[in-house]
Image (cartoon, rainbow, N blue to C red; front, side, top):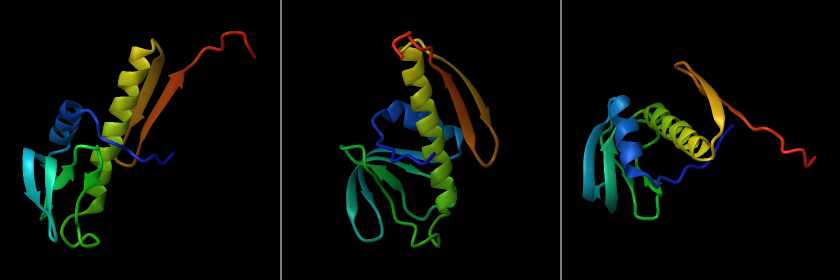
Length: 118
């Protein structure tokens, strides 16, 4: 499954990014190649410029098609953030889930019981 991710929980992003080996730069004005961006920034392993989450939750970065940082590194962070955010929401709704993860993917199975209304 592919999903567009909007980052709203900066504490969760900080935890996930740290687990993935990214440097936490924090809030402020951050320089990308062609622009300055305000927001919360991390710097994944091997990145020339930071990845910045602006106040709307939009992720902004510049890797020059991978020359300034492997897009796969950011992909791992965003995938893990999405999975962790999904687990937070599942717990909030009292749902149970199972998880498996390897270097290529994260798989979540969320159990939803039908309420008999079908």
